Length: 283
Image (cartoon, rainbow, N blue to C red; front, side, top):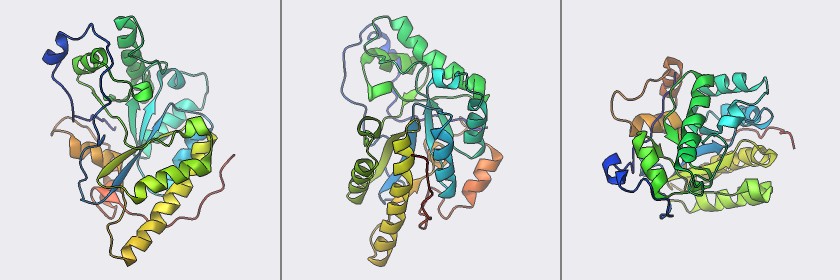
């Protein structure tokens, strides 16, 4: 099955050893969050936080499948361990369809505000354990709730040989609950984007389901315009291909089906897709 690990910006554990007791706030995580563009074109990687959600995650998966996009799903352990009977099938589908699973802590706690270092460490470990129990694959990609960064968290991630995947674009659709505003933010940002951009969205809200197909339709239409004008296209980075690009040899085990599917895409690193009829989605 699919194993993921991002290795940029990982500071050696020895550097952090003396700082492990400190939780003083540090600067934001480095950007570009996904590293430099492999194609030289503006690129976007789709990531989704806080699920899995029995209602909205399957709808997000439907949209991604229709557009042949592979994303990263940063899951919360408590959501994975929910009593919903739909969750195991959702997790299995995410893997089967070639997406990447990653850790978003046990309970979505602010790891830099927790006073107890052991509790903060448990949030990382228990979130990972919940996902791995359900998915039966190792998970080594991590994203801190709220994108917090502090020396204690850096040390704890280094101890676990886990690096943080931050983001470059955050429409905050969870806060506004406004699909039009979400689409406007993302499309404006991508219209002027250079290099690689990691887009943060959430698969636990109806607004995300409503906004996503509009964003993808805009990308396709914008690329049609750019093609006619001989301008650089906006490329969609496939999550497992990004992981293969970033990982040292021998550190990833890939599903045969996923790699075979990716090999059939137009580009080995990214896919530029034609317009797809927008689906009716649940409001």
